Length: 451
View 1 (cartoon, rainbow, N blue to C red):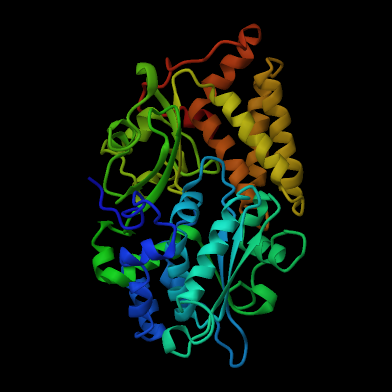
View 2 (view 1 turned 90 degrees about the horizontal axis):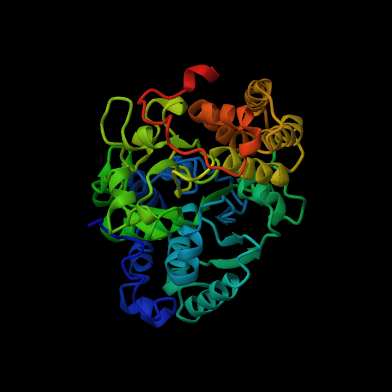
């Protein structure tokens, strides 16, 4: 059974309220941290090996150490709660059921960073959660854990909740900062990075909800003990949002040592695929990461079981691997159409492009139109090559990663499922039929055809 650090108390009735959370050891980490130096806290986070849980997987302690500390200039912590990646909903779970865990992590992190003001930027669709967060903030303030002179230490901190307006682009940290400042949520050119010039041109750290929540167990058990959980550079536990064709969709906490096969089929986690259907493919890290066919999802290119961690999922690069990403685990059974699934994602990224960069603004529209042709049975073989060419010209040519996020699903779909695209073109009269699994038993993907 996986060790739980973040969700260990999630089953306790009333855990969202301060008194219940406090009885379970809540805010003990704050009391411990405020007796440490800010540098010592940052060092514990470095030792823990904690990587950003929002998608990029960048070492958190290292990110904190980049924060500029000019004399007399305010610093800020901004929590990225704009969880807009299709297939991802684990941050929502934390905020809805364990709001004090996030607030406790924010207090510790803000103290370590020397920030006296912190913000939670939350996606507008989570309209009921700000009330939960505001109530928890007020409870923490009444108990002396927020506001002026926290626990008599002389440290001051205020936390504010800010709703977004439903723009996926505001999940990118600089677009988020622009929106927080009251401007249009367009990504900024970097450098300067937020650690130097972020919110209101002041040094700012932007971290995801799960990342900040993970600081609490790190302080409680020490960074060294946290690093013993997991394997290699994939330390600690990770929340996974599991959905799609599985018997038990939900949020699961794993220690990143279990295999993908165990995660999908064990009763502790997803509980297998309904109606005895076979696994066709999976997107293991949210809609922006490459889709992987079943044979490559369950084993690496060396034939070893693929493990639910950063390194194993990326084994072999994007030709045969994928990414942990935001942990949005989307399972597709044998009846699902990769072409139509990719079309749905392409429409999403076209709609959510801010339009600032030409390759993304124009290219996402072209990908959607070409995929629509193919899915409707009016495409040609040349359209597949054109689609490949368009995604290639988007990737790496935009200010922010949204262009990459739009291109990678298309590239992976063609790389691994090109023959399904060809089937749609060869069988225009049969678009209501499902394509099935026939051509995905070979351990060598169809990648070479698309290169």
